[in-house]
Image (cartoon, rainbow over all chains, first blue to last red):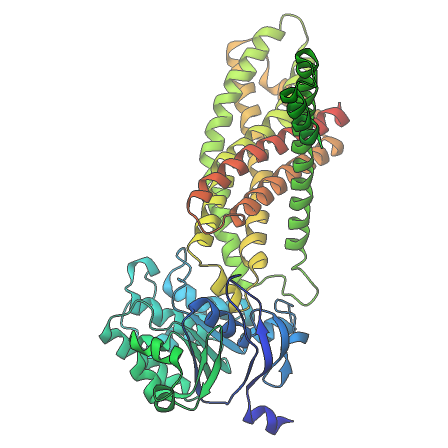
Length: 252
Length: 292
Protein backbone atom coordinates (compact mmCIF):
# COMPACT_ATOMS: atom_id res chain seq x y z
CA UNK A 1 0.00 0.00 0.00
CA UNK A 2 2.74 2.44 1.02
CA UNK A 3 4.77 1.49 -2.01
CA UNK A 4 1.76 2.27 -4.19
CA UNK A 5 1.42 5.67 -2.50
CA UNK A 6 5.07 6.42 -3.09
CA UNK A 7 4.91 5.52 -6.77
CA UNK A 8 1.76 7.44 -7.62
CA UNK A 9 0.83 10.54 -5.66
CA UNK A 10 -2.28 11.55 -7.52
CA UNK A 11 -4.44 9.26 -9.58
CA UNK A 12 -7.54 10.27 -11.51
CA UNK A 13 -9.80 7.66 -13.04
CA UNK A 14 -12.37 8.99 -15.51
CA UNK A 15 -12.73 12.01 -13.26
CA UNK A 16 -14.93 14.91 -14.36
CA UNK A 17 -14.78 18.20 -12.44
CA UNK A 18 -17.71 20.42 -11.60
CA UNK A 19 -18.64 22.63 -14.54
CA UNK A 20 -17.57 26.22 -13.88
CA UNK A 21 -18.72 27.72 -17.16
CA UNK A 22 -21.89 26.20 -18.56
CA UNK A 23 -20.69 26.45 -22.16
CA UNK A 24 -17.68 24.19 -21.57
CA UNK A 25 -17.85 20.45 -22.01
CA UNK A 26 -15.82 18.51 -19.47
CA UNK A 27 -14.38 15.18 -20.58
CA UNK A 28 -13.37 12.40 -18.18
CA UNK A 29 -9.70 12.60 -17.24
CA UNK A 30 -7.62 9.54 -16.38
CA UNK A 31 -4.04 10.23 -15.36
CA UNK A 32 -1.36 9.52 -12.81
CA UNK A 33 0.99 12.08 -11.36
CA UNK A 34 4.19 10.64 -9.98
CA UNK A 35 6.11 12.05 -7.03
CA UNK A 36 8.79 14.64 -7.73
CA UNK A 37 7.58 15.29 -11.25
CA UNK A 38 5.87 18.16 -13.02
CA UNK A 39 2.67 17.65 -14.95
CA UNK A 40 1.35 20.52 -17.00
CA UNK A 41 -2.22 20.92 -18.17
CA UNK A 42 -2.48 22.87 -21.42
CA UNK A 43 -5.43 23.73 -23.61
CA UNK A 44 -7.41 26.49 -25.24
CA UNK A 45 -9.71 27.25 -22.27
CA UNK A 46 -8.18 28.61 -19.06
CA UNK A 47 -11.40 28.09 -17.05
CA UNK A 48 -11.53 24.45 -18.14
CA UNK A 49 -7.90 23.85 -17.20
CA UNK A 50 -8.43 25.53 -13.83
CA UNK A 51 -11.42 23.28 -13.14
CA UNK A 52 -9.27 20.18 -13.79
CA UNK A 53 -6.36 21.57 -11.74
CA UNK A 54 -8.61 22.33 -8.77
CA UNK A 55 -10.18 18.90 -9.08
CA UNK A 56 -6.75 17.24 -8.99
CA UNK A 57 -5.85 19.39 -5.97
CA UNK A 58 -8.97 18.14 -4.18
CA UNK A 59 -10.46 21.64 -4.00
CA UNK A 60 -13.53 21.16 -6.16
CA UNK A 61 -15.77 18.13 -6.17
CA UNK A 62 -15.93 15.51 -8.87
CA UNK A 63 -19.16 14.97 -10.73
CA UNK A 64 -18.07 11.53 -11.97
CA UNK A 65 -15.14 9.16 -11.66
CA UNK A 66 -12.59 8.76 -8.91
CA UNK A 67 -9.60 10.66 -7.64
CA UNK A 68 -7.10 9.55 -5.08
CA UNK A 69 -4.72 11.96 -3.40
CA UNK A 70 -1.76 10.29 -1.70
CA UNK A 71 -3.61 6.99 -1.49
CA UNK A 72 -6.90 8.45 -0.19
CA UNK A 73 -10.06 8.82 -2.20
CA UNK A 74 -11.04 12.46 -2.45
CA UNK A 75 -14.75 11.67 -2.43
CA UNK A 76 -14.52 10.61 1.21
CA UNK A 77 -12.68 13.76 2.32
CA UNK A 78 -14.84 16.70 3.36
CA UNK A 79 -13.00 19.77 2.02
CA UNK A 80 -13.35 21.93 5.14
CA UNK A 81 -13.76 19.31 7.80
CA UNK A 82 -11.74 20.59 10.81
CA UNK A 83 -9.51 17.54 10.90
CA UNK A 84 -9.78 15.48 7.76
CA UNK A 85 -10.32 18.13 5.14
CA UNK A 86 -7.88 20.62 6.57
CA UNK A 87 -5.19 18.00 7.03
CA UNK A 88 -5.71 17.13 3.39
CA UNK A 89 -5.44 20.79 2.38
CA UNK A 90 -2.18 21.15 4.32
CA UNK A 91 -0.66 18.43 2.15
CA UNK A 92 -1.40 20.45 -0.95
CA UNK A 93 0.21 23.82 -1.65
CA UNK A 94 -1.76 25.94 -4.10
CA UNK A 95 -0.11 28.93 -5.75
CA UNK A 96 -2.60 31.20 -7.40
CA UNK A 97 -0.67 33.61 -9.59
CA UNK A 98 -3.68 35.58 -10.76
CA UNK A 99 -5.30 35.90 -7.33
CA UNK A 100 -3.63 38.40 -5.02
CA UNK A 101 -2.44 38.10 -1.44
CA UNK A 102 -4.47 39.58 1.40
CA UNK A 103 -4.00 43.32 0.89
CA UNK A 104 -4.82 44.24 4.48
CA UNK A 105 -1.95 42.14 5.83
CA UNK A 106 1.72 42.74 5.12
CA UNK A 107 3.81 40.25 3.15
CA UNK A 108 5.27 38.41 6.13
CA UNK A 109 1.86 38.00 7.77
CA UNK A 110 0.48 36.63 4.50
CA UNK A 111 3.18 33.95 4.51
CA UNK A 112 2.81 33.23 8.23
CA UNK A 113 -0.97 32.90 8.08
CA UNK A 114 -1.24 29.16 7.17
CA UNK A 115 1.25 28.27 9.94
CA UNK A 116 -0.58 30.34 12.53
CA UNK A 117 -3.92 28.89 11.46
CA UNK A 118 -3.07 25.21 11.02
CA UNK A 119 -0.18 24.63 13.39
CA UNK A 120 -1.13 27.30 15.95
CA UNK A 121 2.58 28.11 16.33
CA UNK A 122 3.67 31.18 18.24
CA UNK A 123 4.14 34.39 16.26
CA UNK A 124 7.91 34.15 16.80
CA UNK A 125 8.13 30.59 15.43
CA UNK A 126 5.89 31.37 12.49
CA UNK A 127 7.80 34.55 11.72
CA UNK A 128 11.18 32.74 11.83
CA UNK A 129 9.89 29.98 9.56
CA UNK A 130 8.47 32.50 7.10
CA UNK A 131 11.64 34.62 7.07
CA UNK A 132 13.80 31.53 6.41
CA UNK A 133 11.58 30.50 3.54
CA UNK A 134 11.59 34.00 2.07
CA UNK A 135 15.39 33.99 2.25
CA UNK A 136 15.43 30.63 0.42
CA UNK A 137 13.24 32.18 -2.26
CA UNK A 138 15.72 35.07 -2.71
CA UNK A 139 13.29 37.72 -1.52
CA UNK A 140 15.43 40.84 -1.36
CA UNK A 141 12.66 43.18 -0.17
CA UNK A 142 11.48 44.02 3.33
CA UNK A 143 8.97 41.25 4.18
CA UNK A 144 6.75 43.56 6.19
CA UNK A 145 5.90 45.56 3.06
CA UNK A 146 2.26 45.50 2.04
CA UNK A 147 1.54 43.57 -1.21
CA UNK A 148 0.25 46.70 -2.97
CA UNK A 149 3.72 48.22 -2.70
CA UNK A 150 5.49 45.26 -4.30
CA UNK A 151 5.94 44.39 -7.96
CA UNK A 152 4.35 41.34 -9.63
CA UNK A 153 7.42 39.14 -9.25
CA UNK A 154 7.76 39.96 -5.55
CA UNK A 155 4.08 39.24 -5.00
CA UNK A 156 4.50 35.88 -6.74
CA UNK A 157 7.49 35.12 -4.52
CA UNK A 158 5.26 35.75 -1.50
CA UNK A 159 2.49 33.59 -2.99
CA UNK A 160 4.96 30.78 -3.55
CA UNK A 161 6.22 31.13 0.01
CA UNK A 162 2.64 30.99 1.31
CA UNK A 163 2.01 27.82 -0.71
CA UNK A 164 5.20 26.20 0.59
CA UNK A 165 5.14 27.27 4.24
CA UNK A 166 3.31 24.15 5.45
CA UNK A 167 5.81 21.84 3.68
CA UNK A 168 3.17 20.32 1.39
CA UNK A 169 3.62 17.05 -0.45
CA UNK A 170 2.15 18.40 -3.67
CA UNK A 171 2.36 21.79 -5.30
CA UNK A 172 -0.34 23.09 -7.62
CA UNK A 173 0.61 26.08 -9.70
CA UNK A 174 -2.19 28.15 -11.15
CA UNK A 175 -0.60 30.43 -13.79
CA UNK A 176 2.69 30.96 -11.92
CA UNK A 177 4.09 33.17 -14.70
CA UNK A 178 1.07 35.44 -14.70
CA UNK A 179 1.79 39.03 -15.69
CA UNK A 180 5.59 38.63 -15.59
CA UNK A 181 8.13 40.05 -18.02
CA UNK A 182 10.63 37.77 -19.76
CA UNK A 183 13.37 38.27 -17.18
CA UNK A 184 11.02 37.68 -14.26
CA UNK A 185 9.62 34.54 -15.91
CA UNK A 186 13.14 33.20 -16.10
CA UNK A 187 13.75 34.02 -12.42
CA UNK A 188 10.43 32.47 -11.45
CA UNK A 189 11.32 29.37 -13.47
CA UNK A 190 14.59 29.07 -11.53
CA UNK A 191 12.75 29.37 -8.21
CA UNK A 192 10.10 26.82 -9.15
CA UNK A 193 12.72 24.39 -10.43
CA UNK A 194 14.15 24.24 -6.88
CA UNK A 195 10.87 22.89 -5.56
CA UNK A 196 9.33 20.80 -8.31
CA UNK A 197 12.13 18.26 -7.96
CA UNK A 198 11.00 17.53 -4.39
CA UNK A 199 7.27 17.87 -4.85
CA UNK A 200 4.51 16.30 -6.87
CA UNK A 201 3.70 19.28 -9.05
CA UNK A 202 0.93 20.13 -11.43
CA UNK A 203 0.47 23.42 -13.22
CA UNK A 204 -1.56 25.39 -15.71
CA UNK A 205 -0.42 28.43 -17.65
CA UNK A 206 2.86 26.76 -18.59
CA UNK A 207 2.64 27.95 -22.18
CA UNK A 208 3.37 31.47 -20.96
CA UNK A 209 6.96 30.22 -20.58
CA UNK A 210 7.48 27.16 -22.86
CA UNK A 211 11.18 26.95 -22.01
CA UNK A 212 10.19 25.93 -18.47
CA UNK A 213 7.98 23.13 -19.77
CA UNK A 214 10.73 22.01 -22.13
CA UNK A 215 13.16 21.66 -19.23
CA UNK A 216 10.97 20.31 -16.45
CA UNK A 217 7.64 18.88 -17.60
CA UNK A 218 7.55 15.08 -17.31
CA UNK A 219 3.98 14.95 -18.51
CA UNK A 220 1.87 17.32 -20.58
CA UNK A 221 -1.88 16.79 -20.72
CA UNK A 222 -3.71 18.60 -23.47
CA UNK A 223 -7.35 19.24 -22.54
CA UNK A 224 -9.95 20.69 -24.86
CA UNK A 225 -13.68 20.23 -25.28
CA UNK A 226 -13.13 17.39 -27.77
CA UNK A 227 -9.97 15.71 -26.67
CA UNK A 228 -7.75 14.80 -23.76
CA UNK A 229 -4.28 13.81 -24.97
CA UNK A 230 -1.29 12.87 -22.87
CA UNK A 231 2.37 13.42 -23.78
CA UNK A 232 5.52 12.45 -21.94
CA UNK A 233 7.26 15.77 -22.44
CA UNK A 234 7.50 18.95 -24.45
CA UNK A 235 9.11 17.34 -27.52
CA UNK A 236 6.39 14.79 -28.10
CA UNK A 237 3.73 17.47 -27.41
CA UNK A 238 5.28 19.76 -30.00
CA UNK A 239 5.45 16.97 -32.55
CA UNK A 240 1.81 16.04 -32.19
CA UNK A 241 -0.32 16.00 -35.34
CA UNK A 242 -3.49 17.06 -33.58
CA UNK A 243 -5.00 20.13 -35.23
CA UNK A 244 -6.09 21.74 -31.93
CA UNK A 245 -2.56 21.46 -30.58
CA UNK A 246 -1.25 23.02 -33.79
CA UNK A 247 -3.69 25.88 -33.38
CA UNK A 248 -2.62 26.35 -29.76
CA UNK A 249 1.08 26.31 -30.58
CA UNK A 250 0.63 28.63 -33.53
CA UNK A 251 -0.32 31.53 -31.26
CA UNK A 252 2.85 31.22 -29.14
CA UNK B 1 -53.10 33.83 -12.89
CA UNK B 2 -54.02 37.47 -12.24
CA UNK B 3 -52.06 38.44 -15.32
CA UNK B 4 -53.89 35.80 -17.35
CA UNK B 5 -57.31 37.10 -16.30
CA UNK B 6 -56.27 40.66 -17.08
CA UNK B 7 -54.98 39.79 -20.54
CA UNK B 8 -58.17 37.84 -21.26
CA UNK B 9 -60.13 40.96 -20.25
CA UNK B 10 -58.01 43.06 -22.59
CA UNK B 11 -58.74 40.66 -25.42
CA UNK B 12 -62.48 40.64 -24.60
CA UNK B 13 -62.54 44.46 -24.52
CA UNK B 14 -60.83 44.58 -27.91
CA UNK B 15 -63.38 42.16 -29.32
CA UNK B 16 -66.28 44.20 -27.85
CA UNK B 17 -67.46 41.39 -25.57
CA UNK B 18 -66.75 43.43 -22.41
CA UNK B 19 -68.22 46.82 -21.53
CA UNK B 20 -65.94 49.74 -20.60
CA UNK B 21 -67.29 50.08 -17.02
CA UNK B 22 -66.73 46.38 -16.37
CA UNK B 23 -63.23 46.77 -17.72
CA UNK B 24 -62.48 49.65 -15.31
CA UNK B 25 -63.85 47.60 -12.41
CA UNK B 26 -61.74 44.59 -13.38
CA UNK B 27 -58.59 46.66 -13.78
CA UNK B 28 -59.23 48.15 -10.32
CA UNK B 29 -59.41 44.64 -8.87
CA UNK B 30 -56.34 43.69 -10.86
CA UNK B 31 -54.32 46.64 -9.48
CA UNK B 32 -55.50 45.89 -5.96
CA UNK B 33 -54.44 42.27 -6.30
CA UNK B 34 -51.10 43.41 -7.70
CA UNK B 35 -50.61 45.76 -4.76
CA UNK B 36 -51.48 43.01 -2.26
CA UNK B 37 -49.26 40.64 -4.19
CA UNK B 38 -46.31 43.01 -3.99
CA UNK B 39 -46.81 43.41 -0.22
CA UNK B 40 -46.95 39.63 0.13
CA UNK B 41 -43.87 39.32 -2.02
CA UNK B 42 -41.98 41.83 0.14
CA UNK B 43 -43.07 40.05 3.32
CA UNK B 44 -42.00 36.72 1.90
CA UNK B 45 -38.64 38.17 0.87
CA UNK B 46 -38.17 39.62 4.35
CA UNK B 47 -38.94 36.24 5.89
CA UNK B 48 -36.49 34.53 3.52
CA UNK B 49 -33.89 37.13 4.47
CA UNK B 50 -34.33 36.43 8.20
CA UNK B 51 -34.07 32.68 7.53
CA UNK B 52 -30.94 33.22 5.40
CA UNK B 53 -29.38 35.38 8.08
CA UNK B 54 -30.12 32.84 10.82
CA UNK B 55 -28.71 29.98 8.74
CA UNK B 56 -25.63 32.09 8.01
CA UNK B 57 -25.07 32.74 11.72
CA UNK B 58 -25.60 29.06 12.61
CA UNK B 59 -23.18 27.97 9.89
CA UNK B 60 -20.58 30.48 11.04
CA UNK B 61 -20.82 29.46 14.68
CA UNK B 62 -20.64 25.79 13.70
CA UNK B 63 -16.88 26.17 13.06
CA UNK B 64 -16.42 25.72 16.78
CA UNK B 65 -16.29 22.00 17.06
CA UNK B 66 -14.58 20.11 19.88
CA UNK B 67 -11.46 19.51 17.78
CA UNK B 68 -10.78 23.19 17.14
CA UNK B 69 -8.38 25.22 19.27
CA UNK B 70 -10.38 27.85 21.11
CA UNK B 71 -7.58 30.37 20.71
CA UNK B 72 -6.36 30.01 17.17
CA UNK B 73 -3.56 32.54 16.79
CA UNK B 74 -4.47 33.61 13.25
CA UNK B 75 -8.10 34.16 14.24
CA UNK B 76 -7.08 35.83 17.49
CA UNK B 77 -4.92 38.36 15.60
CA UNK B 78 -7.85 39.32 13.38
CA UNK B 79 -10.14 39.52 16.41
CA UNK B 80 -7.77 41.94 18.15
CA UNK B 81 -7.49 44.07 14.99
CA UNK B 82 -11.24 44.25 14.72
CA UNK B 83 -11.67 45.01 18.40
CA UNK B 84 -9.30 47.96 18.09
CA UNK B 85 -11.04 49.24 14.93
CA UNK B 86 -14.58 48.69 16.14
CA UNK B 87 -14.33 49.23 19.87
CA UNK B 88 -11.28 51.11 21.08
CA UNK B 89 -11.15 53.59 18.19
CA UNK B 90 -14.84 54.39 18.70
CA UNK B 91 -14.40 55.19 22.39
CA UNK B 92 -13.60 58.87 21.82
CA UNK B 93 -16.59 59.61 19.57
CA UNK B 94 -18.92 57.63 21.82
CA UNK B 95 -17.72 59.54 24.92
CA UNK B 96 -18.10 62.88 23.16
CA UNK B 97 -21.61 62.01 21.95
CA UNK B 98 -22.58 60.73 25.40
CA UNK B 99 -21.33 63.89 27.06
CA UNK B 100 -23.14 66.14 24.59
CA UNK B 101 -26.41 64.20 24.55
CA UNK B 102 -26.28 63.79 28.35
CA UNK B 103 -26.06 67.52 28.86
CA UNK B 104 -28.80 68.28 26.32
CA UNK B 105 -31.28 65.55 27.26
CA UNK B 106 -30.82 65.57 31.02
CA UNK B 107 -30.95 69.34 31.31
CA UNK B 108 -34.10 69.54 29.17
CA UNK B 109 -35.73 66.72 31.08
CA UNK B 110 -34.87 68.20 34.46
CA UNK B 111 -36.04 71.63 33.32
CA UNK B 112 -39.43 70.32 32.10
CA UNK B 113 -40.12 67.76 34.80
CA UNK B 114 -38.67 69.30 37.97
CA UNK B 115 -41.73 71.47 38.49
CA UNK B 116 -44.21 68.60 38.27
CA UNK B 117 -42.42 65.66 39.85
CA UNK B 118 -39.97 64.72 42.62
CA UNK B 119 -36.23 64.23 42.26
CA UNK B 120 -36.57 60.46 42.72
CA UNK B 121 -39.02 60.12 39.84
CA UNK B 122 -36.83 62.33 37.74
CA UNK B 123 -33.82 60.13 38.34
CA UNK B 124 -35.85 57.02 37.54
CA UNK B 125 -37.05 58.53 34.29
CA UNK B 126 -33.55 59.56 33.38
CA UNK B 127 -32.14 56.14 34.21
CA UNK B 128 -34.81 54.29 32.24
CA UNK B 129 -34.44 56.60 29.27
CA UNK B 130 -30.67 56.44 29.16
CA UNK B 131 -29.88 52.91 30.34
CA UNK B 132 -32.61 51.00 28.59
CA UNK B 133 -33.18 53.12 25.49
CA UNK B 134 -30.75 55.80 24.52
CA UNK B 135 -27.50 54.10 25.54
CA UNK B 136 -27.94 50.89 23.51
CA UNK B 137 -29.75 52.59 20.62
CA UNK B 138 -27.34 55.46 20.03
CA UNK B 139 -24.36 53.14 20.43
CA UNK B 140 -26.02 50.77 17.96
CA UNK B 141 -26.48 53.58 15.44
CA UNK B 142 -22.86 54.64 15.83
CA UNK B 143 -21.78 51.02 15.36
CA UNK B 144 -23.88 50.74 12.21
CA UNK B 145 -22.51 53.96 10.72
CA UNK B 146 -18.95 53.28 11.72
CA UNK B 147 -18.31 49.55 11.84
CA UNK B 148 -21.11 47.85 9.90
CA UNK B 149 -20.29 49.87 6.78
CA UNK B 150 -16.55 49.35 7.30
CA UNK B 151 -16.97 45.57 7.59
CA UNK B 152 -19.12 45.38 4.44
CA UNK B 153 -16.62 47.45 2.45
CA UNK B 154 -13.65 45.52 3.83
CA UNK B 155 -15.11 42.06 3.17
CA UNK B 156 -16.67 43.14 -0.13
CA UNK B 157 -13.44 44.56 -1.50
CA UNK B 158 -11.50 41.52 -0.31
CA UNK B 159 -13.97 39.34 -2.19
CA UNK B 160 -13.96 41.48 -5.34
CA UNK B 161 -10.15 41.38 -5.47
CA UNK B 162 -10.30 37.56 -5.20
CA UNK B 163 -8.25 37.45 -2.00
CA UNK B 164 -10.57 35.09 -0.14
CA UNK B 165 -10.49 32.03 -2.42
CA UNK B 166 -6.73 31.38 -2.26
CA UNK B 167 -6.99 31.20 1.52
CA UNK B 168 -9.76 28.62 1.23
CA UNK B 169 -7.47 26.61 -1.08
CA UNK B 170 -4.91 26.58 1.74
CA UNK B 171 -7.50 25.06 4.08
CA UNK B 172 -8.31 28.26 5.96
CA UNK B 173 -12.01 28.36 6.75
CA UNK B 174 -13.61 31.62 5.58
CA UNK B 175 -16.16 31.58 8.39
CA UNK B 176 -13.53 30.95 11.01
CA UNK B 177 -10.98 33.47 9.81
CA UNK B 178 -13.11 36.29 8.37
CA UNK B 179 -16.52 36.13 10.02
CA UNK B 180 -16.32 34.83 13.59
CA UNK B 181 -13.75 37.43 14.80
CA UNK B 182 -15.71 40.27 13.24
CA UNK B 183 -19.03 39.23 14.77
CA UNK B 184 -17.48 38.78 18.21
CA UNK B 185 -15.57 42.06 17.99
CA UNK B 186 -18.80 43.93 17.14
CA UNK B 187 -20.65 42.11 19.92
CA UNK B 188 -18.09 42.95 22.61
CA UNK B 189 -17.69 46.52 21.34
CA UNK B 190 -21.45 47.11 21.42
CA UNK B 191 -21.64 45.87 25.02
CA UNK B 192 -18.70 47.88 26.28
CA UNK B 193 -19.45 51.03 24.30
CA UNK B 194 -23.11 51.03 25.36
CA UNK B 195 -22.04 50.72 28.98
CA UNK B 196 -19.50 53.50 28.55
CA UNK B 197 -22.05 55.68 26.70
CA UNK B 198 -24.69 55.24 29.39
CA UNK B 199 -22.26 55.93 32.22
CA UNK B 200 -20.82 59.07 30.63
CA UNK B 201 -24.24 60.33 29.59
CA UNK B 202 -25.71 59.86 33.08
CA UNK B 203 -22.71 61.36 34.77
CA UNK B 204 -22.60 64.51 32.66
CA UNK B 205 -26.39 64.81 32.59
CA UNK B 206 -26.59 64.76 36.38
CA UNK B 207 -23.58 66.99 36.83
CA UNK B 208 -24.85 69.64 34.45
CA UNK B 209 -28.33 69.53 35.96
CA UNK B 210 -26.96 69.93 39.45
CA UNK B 211 -25.10 73.07 38.39
CA UNK B 212 -28.09 74.72 36.79
CA UNK B 213 -31.13 73.45 38.61
CA UNK B 214 -31.95 72.57 42.16
CA UNK B 215 -30.95 68.93 41.94
CA UNK B 216 -28.39 67.34 44.22
CA UNK B 217 -25.97 65.23 42.16
CA UNK B 218 -25.13 63.11 45.19
CA UNK B 219 -28.76 62.25 45.91
CA UNK B 220 -29.43 61.64 42.25
CA UNK B 221 -26.49 59.24 41.97
CA UNK B 222 -27.54 57.40 45.13
CA UNK B 223 -31.07 57.03 43.78
CA UNK B 224 -29.68 55.87 40.48
CA UNK B 225 -27.53 53.16 42.05
CA UNK B 226 -30.58 51.91 43.94
CA UNK B 227 -32.41 51.45 40.64
CA UNK B 228 -29.76 49.18 39.19
CA UNK B 229 -30.67 45.57 39.92
CA UNK B 230 -30.03 42.16 38.35
CA UNK B 231 -33.09 42.35 36.08
CA UNK B 232 -32.16 45.71 34.60
CA UNK B 233 -28.55 44.59 34.20
CA UNK B 234 -29.53 41.35 32.44
CA UNK B 235 -31.96 43.24 30.23
CA UNK B 236 -29.22 45.75 29.34
CA UNK B 237 -26.71 43.00 28.54
CA UNK B 238 -29.24 40.95 26.55
CA UNK B 239 -30.35 43.92 24.52
CA UNK B 240 -26.80 44.92 23.62
CA UNK B 241 -25.92 41.30 22.93
CA UNK B 242 -28.76 41.09 20.39
CA UNK B 243 -27.87 44.48 18.91
CA UNK B 244 -24.21 43.50 18.55
CA UNK B 245 -24.83 40.06 17.09
CA UNK B 246 -27.37 41.37 14.57
CA UNK B 247 -25.15 44.27 13.42
CA UNK B 248 -22.11 41.96 13.09
CA UNK B 249 -24.04 39.21 11.30
CA UNK B 250 -25.78 41.57 8.87
CA UNK B 251 -22.47 43.30 8.06
CA UNK B 252 -20.65 40.03 7.37
CA UNK B 253 -23.59 38.54 5.46
CA UNK B 254 -23.75 41.52 3.11
CA UNK B 255 -19.96 41.73 2.85
CA UNK B 256 -19.82 38.17 1.58
CA UNK B 257 -22.85 38.74 -0.67
CA UNK B 258 -20.72 40.95 -2.91
CA UNK B 259 -20.05 39.23 -6.22
CA UNK B 260 -17.32 40.11 -8.68
CA UNK B 261 -18.27 43.70 -9.38
CA UNK B 262 -17.05 46.67 -7.29
CA UNK B 263 -20.42 48.38 -7.77
CA UNK B 264 -21.97 45.69 -5.57
CA UNK B 265 -19.90 46.86 -2.62
CA UNK B 266 -21.78 50.14 -2.22
CA UNK B 267 -25.06 48.39 -3.02
CA UNK B 268 -24.54 45.81 -0.28
CA UNK B 269 -23.32 48.47 2.13
CA UNK B 270 -26.56 50.44 1.71
CA UNK B 271 -28.61 47.28 2.24
CA UNK B 272 -26.60 46.35 5.34
CA UNK B 273 -27.01 49.78 6.91
CA UNK B 274 -30.75 50.03 6.26
CA UNK B 275 -31.45 46.47 7.40
CA UNK B 276 -29.31 46.84 10.51
CA UNK B 277 -31.31 49.93 11.50
CA UNK B 278 -34.58 48.06 10.89
CA UNK B 279 -33.37 45.09 12.96
CA UNK B 280 -32.18 47.37 15.73
CA UNK B 281 -35.55 49.08 15.96
CA UNK B 282 -37.41 45.75 15.81
CA UNK B 283 -35.35 44.32 18.65
CA UNK B 284 -35.81 47.52 20.61
CA UNK B 285 -39.58 47.38 20.05
CA UNK B 286 -39.60 43.82 21.32
CA UNK B 287 -37.85 44.92 24.50
CA UNK B 288 -40.20 47.88 24.96
CA UNK B 289 -43.23 45.60 24.63
CA UNK B 290 -41.93 42.93 26.98
CA UNK B 291 -40.11 44.98 29.61
CA UNK B 292 -42.55 47.80 30.22
